[in-house]
Image (cartoon, rainbow, N blue to C red; front, side):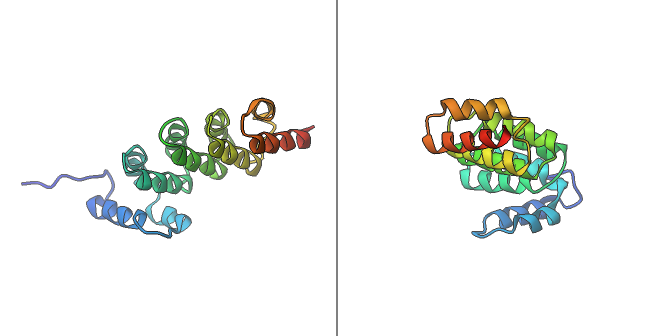
Length: 163
């Protein structure tokens, strides 16, 4: 009987098992894992980000943030719109590591979120990515209308620096 492969890569099940073992650790070296697993891991990471195991989903989303490419951008953009707040935070954080178009697509969602943590990381990533001017209207809206005063204040300070 033939064995079914779990991924399209040469690594197969052993690679997915190794990736799962990595993600189940307490302290993770995401940059090193991104280099080790790379783009080949993205289909499996996409499944994990959408899984019901929130701890694994969050870690998978953070790892995707360290892997470059259009597919990683799409996974993070989707994660920014669905799932729990910690998964959306991971997506907002991952935007810092994207090219400007990918980052902006993710941050468009993060800066419209209702969760203060997601918006906070969205603002931090916008600043780190130097995309404040591209996202000015969203940041301005946050500075005027957001319910959390701390986040509102951070957005207000960003607006002052843009003028």
